[in-house]
Length: 226
Image 1 (cartoon, rainbow, N blue to C red):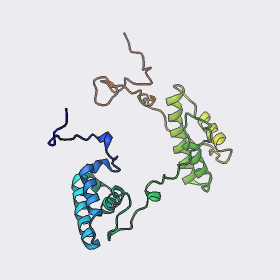
Image 2: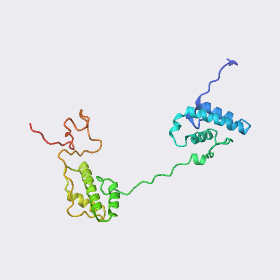
Image 3: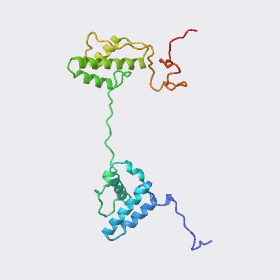
Image 4: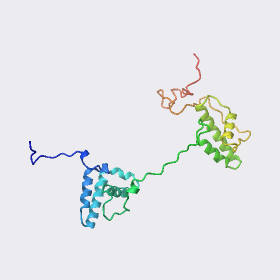
């Protein structure tokens, strides 16, 4: 049976050109194609400004970006396949710049000497090693030792001596940081809780430590009287 002259032919997305900027839709692509066909450059430029306004209304989240107006003009040239002769208010982008990949971020592959303290401890020790001896350096060492003790208790066991922490400081610093004699750390409160990240459970309390605020003690609280 022959098709009628009034038969409407349907087109599917798989049968048409792939959109370079899908967020603007195929209607904007048709506008850009008509824009390119305008022979007068001045009129073509005016029409380009109107198309950019339409693109702005279709993609309002572009306002969240820096230099958003320039982004819209860049998108216009991308949609046009970089083949658009208009007087744009910004430099015309090129495929090499648009499609270039950012430089890869170098990964720190140096092994961590003490995982329970983390990688940044060695950087902090390097910073402290460069400080002149005095009250400021002693205060920095004491603060670092308290933090290292906390990290040690999270990942290892319930108790650790101050001397062990001091030895770790000197060992991890390669002997460049010496803990002054007589330095003392603050006492650990009986209510202190040292739980691994993500292991702090909530049991009907807003503070996440149970009703009395003392439930979580590394999941080994004090034994109560029967």
